[in-house]
Image (tube, rainbow, N blue to C red; front, top):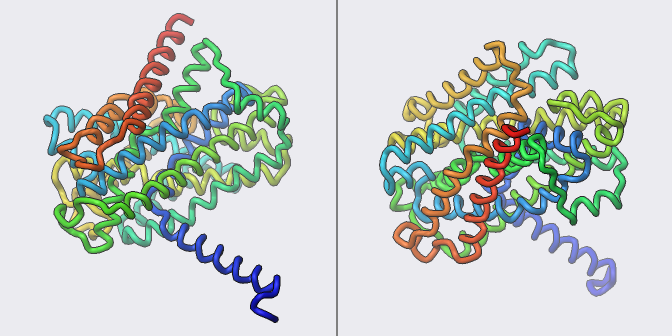
Length: 436
């Protein structure tokens, strides 16, 4: 075959495109993993409740929240890359101790509740699929995740997490199996709809809380540090600063991860709206109920995709929740804290992981219905996020910390808008709930 023949040219184009895709995928890391971890079982439950209760109407929130969450995660990524420290480490150096430990306390409270909710959700859905009681599955998942974090390296964990993100494509497939009303979907996506009720605002705060979650701020910055450590940059001095290329790669990574996160969010709301809400089932409280209800409405395919997607999301989300607790406490206390370091050399860091997992598991066995906490853990995240968002924007806007990498006008505007929106939404939620 001639080198200039149409077939040869097509083959060369395919080869070039394949090479570009491989380079693009190989450059994805902390941003992609953070975005995928955002769609944990708590998020899946929140989005399911939202679609069932309000139909297609909240779809606009996926577009609205994307630039806000992307801006915050870009700030956190740059903070880790430029300073060589995680978020808690920078707060420790720059602010009083009460600010540092207050931020860590907010994070730990939200994360422990979230861990309990996610483990409970994974156990309940697995029980639904297998018939075995969830009380057996919940500790099994907790033990598996602890072993993964304790006895593997950051590089292996990053590769595993990267492939686990594929589980979330199940929700995109499930949406098409639900046969939605596409004209109504387009209208709801492009035209915002707001209801002045306590239930609606609690749901909106839940969406924002599970989309722009405090643990993602700490995780993103810490993973940029871990990336440097895995490349042999062990001291803060070696890690400080970032080249223009590193900044560009990180921005692409974060934008890809946040776009993927919101795409999954969008299709989960759409699936629940097209099936549950459209058939009058508007009062579900968990993702398990959503999965059960999907089976007669959208068939076995949607049911299995929804259920298995939740388990895969939990295997990605729970380690990030426990890990972000450990990074924050270790940085605050100035301990050695890295998944690249073996447990005997970083016992405090790994002890925090174990304690966070044990507390989360304890909530599941304390008589509390951790599965129902899936939605309310998202609301808790939304209410606790504003003070941490303010800290992130302040830190990344300071020239003495970030130098020429400090926030530009657009990032600052998006950051303050994000903090303001979440604060106002939380206040309205409490006011409408109180006044009825």
